[in-house]
Length: 239
Ligand SMILES: Nc1ncnc2c1ncn2[C@@H]1O[C@H](COP(=O)(O)OP(=O)(O)OP(=O)(O)O)[C@@H](O)[C@H]1O
Ligand SMILES: Nc1ccn([C@@H]2O[C@H](COP(=O)(O)O)[C@@H](O)[C@H]2O)c(=O)n1
Ligand SMILES: [Mg+2]
View (cartoon, rainbow, N blue to C red):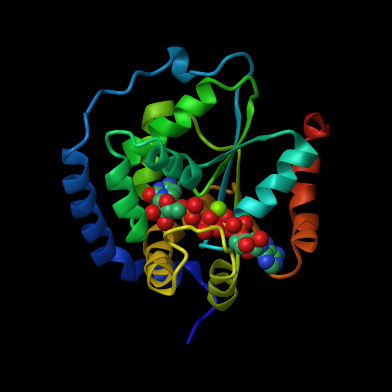
């Protein structure tokens, strides 16, 4: 049986053991990484030009984050940074920790935050744009806190694509892009991690008044009509 992820707060209390397991896992994983201390930009700003406008894009696996990000890019001129894509690029580039990332993604677990934040930060630093969609991040409170620490930046908007599990599973199994994690076993693991680690982040931004919840059921165009007003409210984003 699949169920809709509706009440966020009721799910949060059950997360403790998953959180501890993930923390122990991250520690073991991270032991094999070089632990260079991150450098912080002057006044916490490592970007060129304007103050960055940061949108975090959250939602379960297959909820349509990437699909909607493409539309936001087309309509509002953002730069799309998918944390998952950046990690997959590390695997393909065969970097020193590519194999570890591959194992982590196959297990549906979360890659240590410092690794992911540094990849995101590098992309932001080398971009001439100041409007960023950071898709699939933060996936956990640890991700969120690491981003704040390393970049000293805070998101302006957080989008949350709220989708029933049954629909997410259907979409992922039909995706057909050859992803190693698009199989039923890994999807189940990713859904558990989503509930235990990602929903607390959603809840955090909800309490801070930054969250825009989008009903992710319907056609991609219908869903985008809920997204559009969030950005249209900022006149400077009209391209
Ligand atoms: N509204 C929609 N209705 C039906 N299918 C959709 C819709 N939006 C996206 N899809 C399809 O569902 C699949 C998953 O979408 P997408 O890759 O955008 O999700 P995602 O949230 O980025 O997933 P992940 O977290 O696994 O990267 C894709 O094959 C996409 O074409
Ligand atoms: N902040 C993140 C984002 C992703 N991952 C890992 O990548 C997998 C795929 O991510 P998608 O956003 O493309 O679905 C995800 O299941 C994680 O294993 C991560 O560790 N941290
Ligand atoms: Mg995606």
